[in-house]
Image 1: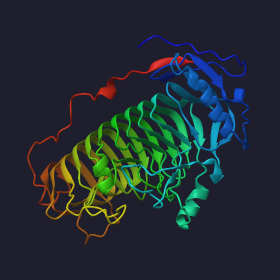
Image 2 (image 1 turned 45 degrees about the vertical axis):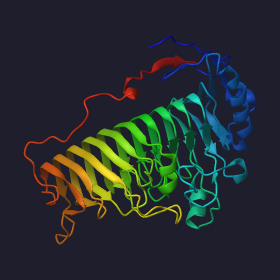
Image 3 (image 1 turned 180 degrees about the vertical axis):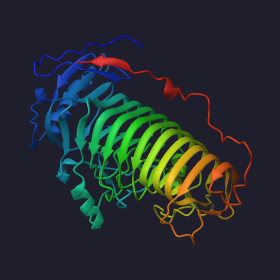
Length: 450
């Protein structure tokens, strides 16, 4: 477990607190040491930046933690540093500024080639970091409020000249922990680790209105060795979306998302997926494992989204133990998810979708058991469904078939209702699920304190 770094704060108002983290810190400071005012009105962007700048001097001397005490701390975008912990106490709320001048402009991500909302650049995320090592954002269930409604209105009115900010985005970083916080109302995606590795995201409550645009919960993007556990997400978009770049730009960067484990997720998203693979998957997605996951009043469960022009692959996907209630689709794969960054995509770049395994699933109040649509001349293969019990909704039209399959191949075993002919029955088959552990599963938390 390693030695414990005892971190003391000379501030009688702050009670000491133990918390789990991948690394403890030798040095501490409180946000108010840097002139911050927690009244919800005063901008604290300078206080956050000066605090983190000051604490960065300890990155090679045991690291540092910045404590955000109870209060409402209004701020624009700020940047993290290496060997650093941002800790939000129980009644601490970080409020995102609605003043666009407090959000610096960033270039587009190289694997996307353009912004998601507009062709030009993008706003920096509220909490941003790049080219770092050992970064922790945690707390005693403190809150980060993105105050996203004004951004959603601008987006819906087509007024965005740059892409909306994400809540937390960390690029080119090794060792990331984001845990034990409540995140609400992000302007767009909530948590976006990209081009990064060795990531643990656990104990988050993520909440956005179910009609808010693009408020994905957790989006690992071109990242490796990721552990996502014990999260509760209500979203206007996918609760989790695994991505790896868009068409020719993602193919050129060529960084897959791989070695990802998702456990004990609860998702509510009436218009989107509990877990989406894609649609931006042009660096490839491989070795994703999901187990003990729950979706309620959600459009689909573990969905694959891709298109001609994406190239790359989605393969070695393993899902075990899904509990679903009130779903439009249990199984949904789409080969015609046709949004492209520009006209420069290669129509010959066909994605390889293979080795997709689902087992041990119960679902009730379902409109469609499965809609599996591959690509003509590029079928999705190696699909396996086993031990699946689906109760169809009484309200659904009896004219509509429970299954619709084209350009797919695979097998099924003990699936009710009986799947389409392209997934023929194979007796007493258990679809694959790996018995080994991913390296990130062996990472143990230390008990840290301040």
